[in-house]
Image (cartoon, rainbow, N blue to C red; front, side, top):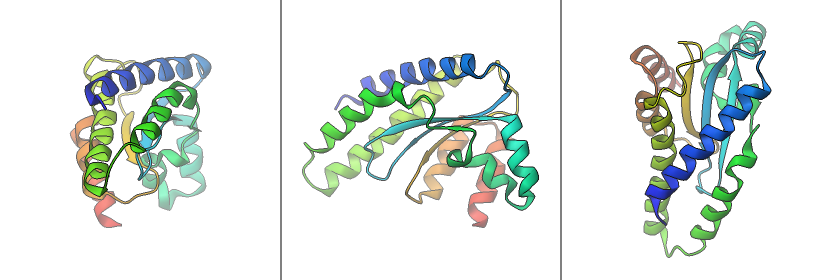
Length: 174
């Protein structure tokens, strides 16, 4: 698989998805953007969070406020816009069927995850997220795996020092 092309395709899908969701939810102040994959690197999905939703869930459960902030599965618009990633996910599943052995799979998965982070980083560097709240966060995570040190590295690449330190402190406290 051409992972540089995957990064380009993901960045384009993210831009289209998040632009469409911004238009769909114009009355919302966006505070989080995410991509997530699974432990098998077979799919890519988006999530978007609103400040209103985050405040509501944190008010209902203040002890887990940081969890709600950093967990795209709990966000207002988790999986909304997944259609923008459908073709990419199909090609990932097709590519996995061609792999031979655990070493090839591990390398493939690492490259898919890197393409996801790099695509979000590309949008960040182009100022795509700048029109939102300065407190917004950008997340890449894996829905069904525990890779805390990788997630800390990814969050650090995608967020400022204050946000990434908060995330690292939280993850390491679990």
